Length: 568
Image 1: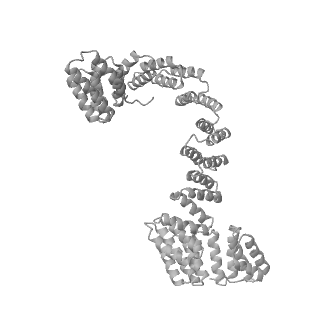
Image 2: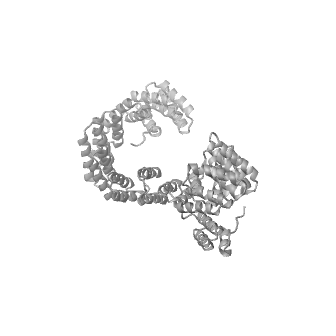
Image 3: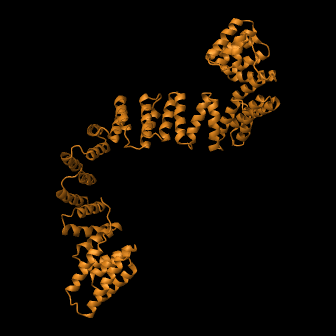
């Protein structure tokens, strides 16, 4: 319905009302002359925007002629100008009572009541108006709206019928009558109204959509589906209809049809990104392995909203569920291009870089993330780890010292900071301080097998305390005897102790558990060399190189056909 507003018709109405009364009466008396002069002064003041002067002048008119409706209406309009609705209504009511046949006073009063929420009073005005002018479509429409608000649905339908007599069948009118009939529980008449309108507007989408919603509300899914098919047939680009059909077929486990309509719907922009996201995420939750078509839907979201991080983020979630970590990481990093302040996206990026051993990227991104979220200890830990892996040892120590101050009631994380600091101290050949830091880590969290393993490895590589190292790794293997990295550490300790046969046995077991690990393969070559089998040593060293080892010492071993002790 159009917005109902006050009518400002004073310029046209007042001369017509006021002067007519003046000229039909005796204008020779002093009172008549005073009235005419005061009334026209009031008009001039109002037209110039001198509202206070106009009010005083109209008041003077009413003193001279207390029954003058034109002066009363003039006052109502002035009070409207200064937003005094109470006074404006009071003088409009006065004008209407003084001249009940003036339909324009009634109209103004009807709209005033409407805007004040006085629907009973407003309806009485509009009933009088449509009786006076039954062909006035605007008044009929407003009257129907008021009747509807007052729960007088049958009368509202009659008012809309009168509008239809004037304008012919129109979809909007038919839908309004449909809703009114439904409120009266006359469903057959409601549907008949829509079908009647469809004979005139067979392809009108609002009419088809109204029936679709109705059938869904009544759980008549097959009828709703047929209407949706018709809707899409008439308008293939109708986003909502395509998505609704996609949802129907998906719930019927007909994925090929479902994705056909989903893809058609996602290509348009008639539905906001959040709605599309919720559809994708609902299917994501229910799929152990994500369908390729679902990833295609994420790509369509990105195509329609290329600068919104949400599309890239949801694509990352889908790819990660399929264990496509590299592609998932790329999607999350694209999301960060458009949204820097969402920590969950940063967290996914950092964790994937850590898992994929992309320490150069982790170093750069963790440092950037820690600047944005300086109080999150997990970010600081990943930054510390990246520093250690890239041999930025002093930076790692500083980062660890800062990070452990952020930890609250998390012994495991606090222990990890001390362990990483220990690694960095060993890297700087500050072995005594490194041992102290690792001892602190173990004392805080004695159950952390990885910390004990790394501590043992550091002791072995630095030839600091091989007895302590072997004791630590034996404790670890008691709890986890089949972890390749732990077994490899045991082999390195035995290798450092000169027990090459024992070391070979451990390296063989580790290699059997993980044949694609370049480090275990290289260690096998080292053990064979120490046992005098040069050909076997070369075989495993070359295999380690083919597995992607970047160890410069490995190339030197192959070229010189001899073992080269790693620098520490």
